[in-house]
Every structure is written in C-alpha cells, then in structure tokens.
Amino acid sequence: MDEKKDRIISATKELIAQYGFKKTTMDEVATKARMGKSTMYYYFKNKEDIFAEIVRIDSDLFRQKLINAIQTAYSPQDKIMQYVRTRMLHLKELSNYYKTLTNEYLDHYFFIEKVREDFYSFENKTLSDLINKGIQQNIFTPCDIDVVVHMIAIAIKGLEYPLFIQKEQDLEKDSKQMMEIIFKGIEIRA
Amino acid sequence: MDEKKDRIISATKELIAQYGFKKTTMDEVATKARMGKSTMYYYFKNKEDIFAEIVRIDSDLFRQKLINAIQTAYSPQDKIMQYVRTRMLHLKELSNYYKTLTNEYLDHYFFIEKVREDFYSFENKTLSDLINKGIQQNIFTPCDIDVVVHMIAIAIKGLEYPLFIQKEQDLEKDSKQMMEIIFKGIEIRA
DNA sequence: TCTTCGACCAAATCCGTTTTGTGGTCGAAA
DNA sequence: TTTCGACCACAAAACGGATTTGGTCGAAGA
Image (cartoon, rainbow over all chains, first blue to last red):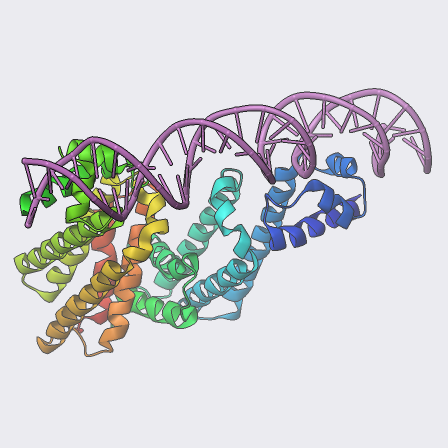
C-alpha cells in the first residue's frame, strides 16, 4: 500500500528537517508514522533507503519546478534567466529548510551521488537545448554549446557559494546581473 | 634575531603542510627548529600567532605574485585574465600543498579572517582599477564597476569550486573561457 | 500470500572516569 | 637579551560499562 510508504516518508521528512539524519531514530519515525518499527522494513530496505527516496522525490519536484519556470518565459534569454533564478531560489529555500543537514550531507552524499549526477545531466541537457534554440532563432551567436553550458554551470556554482557559507546575499539580483553579462557575451551583435 | 623567527616559521610550515595545524605539536616544531620549546615563546605569543604569521607572509607573497602577473600583460583584458589565471593556479598549488589543512581551515579561519578580508579588499581595488582603466581607454563600455567586479568575484568562486571538492578540472582553460565571455559582455562593440 | 509487529541481537554510541599529551608559564642562568 | 628545564593546568585520548539504535526473524493476523 502506497499510503503507508507516504506516512513513513512524510514522518521521516519532518523529523529529518528538525533533527537531521543521524539524530532521527527509526523508533521516532515509527511512532510518528503510527506503526511498528519493523513494519517500516517491509516497505524500505533500511534507513538510508528512506532518505534516498526522499531525495529522489524532492529532486523530481525540483526538476518539474524548473521545467515550469522555463515554460512561463518566451525568449531564450528569459528562459535561461528563469531557470537560473528558480534554481537559486529553490536552493536557498532548501538550505533554510535542511540547515541541520548541511554538515551531514557530505558524509552521506555517496548515496545521493546518483541523484546528483542525474540532476546535472538534466541541467546540462536543458541548458543545451535552450542555447541551441537561441542559436537557431538567430539570437545567440553560433558557438561551442558545451563550453557555454559549462560556463553557466560555473556561474551557478559561484552564485551558490554564499548559500554554502550561510552568507546573506541578493541571489536574485546577482543571478540576473551575472546572466545578463553572459548573454551579452553570446548574443548576436546588432 | 630574525633568523630564529625564520627557523620557527619554516619548521612550522613544513610540519603543518604534512600533518595539519592541530596535529602539529609545539614540541615537534621546537625539535625541527633546533631549539627549546620555551624559546619559541620568546619570539611568538602562541601557536596561533605562528600560524597567523605564516598566513600573513603567504598572503603578501600571493599579492605580489598577482601584481607581477598584471604587469606582464598590456591590455586591460589581458591584465584581468592574467590576474584570474594566476589566482587560480596559485590556489590550486595551495590546495595541493595544504591538502590536510582544508578541513581545519574552517575551524581556524576566525583568526585568518582579517587576512582574508584584507585580501578581498585588495582584490576588489585591483580589479576596479583595471576595469576603470579599460573604460578610460575606451575598451570597456562605461558601466557600474562594482557590479562587474562582483560578477568577476562570483565567477572566481565558481572556478574555485572544483578545488574545494578536490575535483580535477582544467582551471586554466575554464578561467580563460569564463573571462572571455565576461569581456564580451563589457567590451565596447565595434 | 501479504502485512504487522514484539522480541531479540550485534554493533554503534554515549558517558563518566582515568590517563596522557600538549600549549603555555616561570625563574634561573648564561 | 636570550635560552631552556621544570612545571602546571587543562584539553584530549583511552577505557570500559551501560544504553541506544538500526536491523532481523519468526509468529500471528488478515
């Protein structure tokens, strides 16, 4: 039954958001999900498996959010801009929510690695497509798309940095200005 | 006598590069510097003081290296490019050398903070001057210099990222391409 | 056959205590 | 002014016993 899985997932999510992965015990999750601890092992292989599922779901939602953001914009520039903007704002939200988790994240990221790689591959394809479309529409100058995507990825990493060190920053403004400069670098000149 | 200070500094540097700050004991340093432990306290206030001095010296050398790099180039673009290139290569060297230290770095950066701030302020001024000169020479389009410098800083952070996660990357190539895009964004159009 | 769970286990974690190691001081002496 | 051995206080490691916790299993209910 999927409803049981959901109960486990949402209980785990809440507890993990508050206490982090390590400090959340399976007993607590079981209590919160209103079932015996052993029952959970009927639905999930182990503790990490639950967490992996949560990450997978969140990642899917994130991707969907990005796809929606792209669709609301028209020009390739706006689409890319919306992509980056949405990505940064979501990450900021995440970093607030999972503040406790940040440190453990590194310890456990071996089993998130797959999701992370999948995401990067999605991001790469999405941005490539957008730039390609921009070139076909005679808006961007023909160029090595992989290089441009890689540069955007580097810019994104730079924008992420303040989140990582919990430094306040106007992400939206920075994203906008950064992307504007990059656009000027690849737009066809009048 | 300055020669004594140097012996302490260089002994500490070697040991710290190998074992990190915490695992390096004052006894070891004293032995390597061929003097009694107490003697070192005649020249330095405490252990951190030695480390702070090392960081200060290294930082000065780094700055000098960057100034030299700028002087070897002629156009504002090349100067900025050389700046970024030299900065990244130096950081890569550092990150190899002080591999052990990376983790502790965060714990101790409170007493490196001052040096770090000074460096950022130097970097900001240096880049501002270069861009300003570029505008005066009619090479860069007049713009909000602070914004451009901030964007370059973000790009640099993005370029630093692979160092931080010990991921191999062609820093020199990435730096070059990233800066070329930014230049296209601020150059006066023909 | 599918689902639930109490009882149970081994390994990890916690926690109070003791031992050791280490940064730093001081006074004497050169 | 410079050097250092002896010494101290305290932080970190080592230890070992008690507790917690992730995970298994077989029985029992649907």
